[in-house]
Image (cartoon, rainbow, N blue to C red; front, side, top):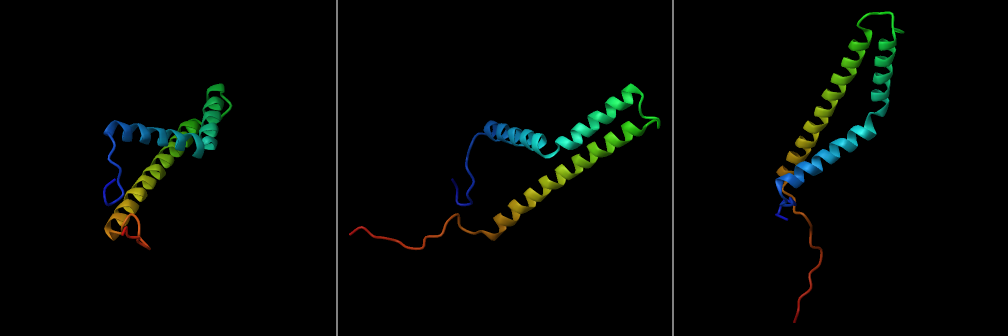
Length: 101
């Protein structure tokens, strides 16, 4: 671990960890939107939606809105890491020391 608290691990390990994090985020944060989108698409295929283009419009708005919110979250994490790095605080503070005599 270096003085900023970063762990030196292989690039492939960091990528795999990031993919697992993204998969868990997608599975836990947006099940309602995914289920609702699928329901709208199924209703459109069955012909139960009278307005043409409704299903594609709604699903695309939800998809791109989620995409934008996701990347805003990534930007927020990036700015937070920059903020923590700029403060240059130590990883830990020693409150008391002992000496061997």
